[in-house]
Image 1 (cartoon, protein in one colour):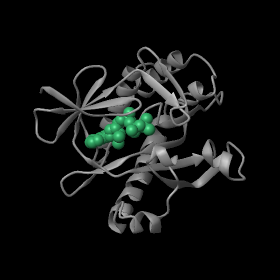
Image 2: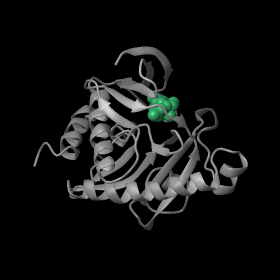
Image 3: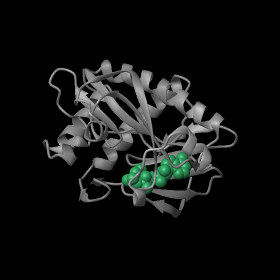
Length: 237
Ligand SMILES: Nc1ncnc2c1ncn2[C@@H]1O[C@H](COP(=O)(O)OP(=O)(O)OP(=O)(O)O)[C@@H](O)[C@H]1O
Ligand SMILES: [Mg+2]
């Protein structure tokens, strides 16, 4: 497969066309950003850790019947994916109160959310990703009622699978963000599932094992990304 021209470049990944129909290459860069790009850094190997964890999780989900865009890794940072027409939604599943839920609503960090909560934001940095509801999504023509149903069912299914995967490694899956897109007739899970898109707490110590370490300067970000990547991909006991 040949990498062709750059299709778009986001804050952390670059997406390239290829010489194969329906296939793109996603390159995970070492850029890390937070607060809508207000905080920015380049951290060596960060792209590799996120790519490795994303690939591992996409394979695990595929084995469990989830339709994902993942095809294969070309090298440590480049992933071949199915070219999707992305739906501009950030589908967030929350198992424990944290982050913006605690900032915006009267709920204490760490409160278990049972059943889990799905929050859907409009993926638009210029509008600071405003929260949507089903009626707005349908009125704006972002997705149909049927697509929305598929997306929510899939998000909850992914939550069950990922929560189990993390629990086996002594990690609480606090919350995470998914992006979906349209392939031919089918909705696929796209983008990435990594330490940048999940909020993970160590079950024993409560320590953050995700981008909150970068956001709130809680420690050595790359040492933690490396360690959590080993744990998730089960390369260490
Ligand atoms: N299978 C796919 N087909 C087409 N586009 C995809 C696919 N998977 C992910 N994308 C898109 O590729 C881009 C990845 O880049 P990146 O995540 O760095 O940028 P961003 O989402 O614009 O910014 P950020 O996530 O930092 O807010 C995103 O726009 C994402 O929606
Ligand atoms: Mg992104």
